[in-house]
Image 1 (cartoon, helix red, strand yellow):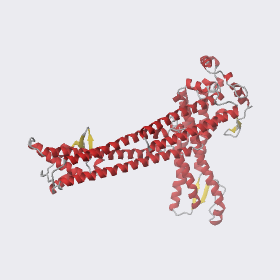
Image 2: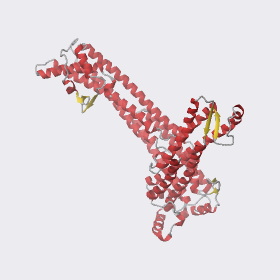
Image 3: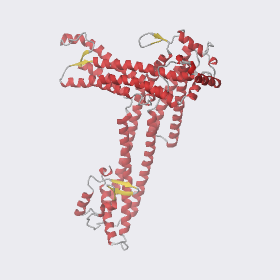
Image 4: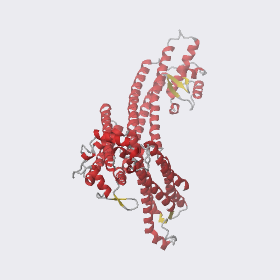
Length: 581
């Protein structure tokens, strides 16, 4: 518990350091408290920019009031936005409502976004498994043909040779190709069998056909090239588009966050979830081992953790948003301008990126043809396009209803242009991602709190039953010591597991990615088998051509030639899966 609270308050302090370092501003200053004498250069830059952008007095609403006039009305309380602060007081603070809009517009259905990503990953993994199975079947068929080829022309090895070959090719050998050289256990194959003590009689059933061998090699090569090209395309798409899918609106803001900036917060969240899992699952399993009919849970410790986390998150979010608006105000000079300008900038930026990705996907589909990974990725980015459009429309409706501004007005869009011209995208979005990250984490914590409240409600319903039947509800007035029937708790446990699964934003990393990488690696091994089989068939062909006329070979070369034929024909016949790993 002490470590958890230390982490909570540490990430608050770290937030302040990050903002001071990255933004070069104090998070505690307010735009209204700037020392005029020390900010002449800032005023000069702002005055200069007004010459290039639409002046504030030309940005007017439907009532012909300037944006500065509307800002004054908000400050005086003449415009009611209609929301509440954490302490329950009414407020018209745009910075507070900025938080609420992100919460409601971006993350209201975060679990659905996550489910779609998981579905794509699962489909991609299943596709790779199917490809692996098809390649394995193709290789098995080609190997069977190669084995029949060997059995047609060669008798079985003598007992002596069989024993020597088995000793040389135990389960620990590895076949590979390096710089077009066939390797056995990192040695060139010629060196590997050079010291073998074989009986050098080659027992042939009939005259060897190099033409038949060449046909085998040619067909193998066609299949190998087909699978290789297919793998290259798929691997490129997986690396390119699966990564892009994980950086879609809106969960991209969680995943794009500076990990250093949220390091302590991330650790605090991990500790919180470990405590929750221990309370709601591990202890429950231990109780069931004793064949208990009822489940006893003390939720007080995790309640403290949850509400501590919410309190610190609320403070940290307010602090981050204050610093963010302070940065925007240095260029836009006003919360309303910053509020409207940033949302216009954000949605314009997201629409451009989404449009580029969709064009790229459609181009690849037209070039390559039907591809399940590309089709699934395209579907998700079309969904992203729709999500962006809907969120943008809601923001514009909000601006129109509350401030009477047309979100498509050319003069209003000059605020967006100021942001493009005065801020580096990376720096601005890093600050925003920290805000979005914290808001999403707070949403998850609130989901856990809702589950605790659900448990309490269910326990109170069961309370009279337990008191009457087992006289076990001795802590009736203690709201945190809960007793539920096993059947009821089993139902509620599903709710907890759903929240836990929905908070697994990094589901793809590392375990799921490892599955995809492992399957890709297995596919490459399977494809490499074709290349190795062909290398063995080519090498055997060359040696069979030599043995037809040994007049120009030295005694040593004749011996090596026969050893090669014995060894190659055995390997082709007996190829084992474990030799390729």
